Image (cartoon, rainbow, N blue to C red):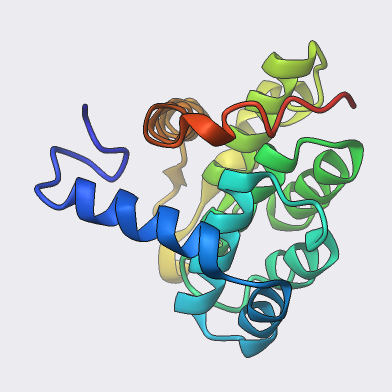
Length: 184
């Protein structure tokens, strides 16, 4: 199976087994400590685990970590966790993030992950929250590092990539596949 990070990964079995072990062993206290650390590696890990399990208990901590977008890469996994939690609050948080960081301007953060997560939730629940962001291409224009050149992010690529992540999780973590089937 193609790994969502690109290409085939030789260590995917080790990664999956390590993730499963963490899902079994980590406690609520561990999760809270990881969210409170502010360390991007711990934030990635804890949101990855919350997303796989669809744990709703930490949605406020996810929001607190996502919206200010202070740490690199962790926003991607916060968006993943919100999609897997899949409730109305998840949608509100993803929309708040997109409202804050679109148009892109100089802020190339996790907009593609947020739109991927929001559109995935729309597909899952028959809603159209992502439509507003997808219909206006001007929202996706940016100036990387203040350059005068305009760069256009492609939200369709974010949506495609996000579906790969979900496919990966559903394939390798089938015991948790039904955790995100909540109703908005």
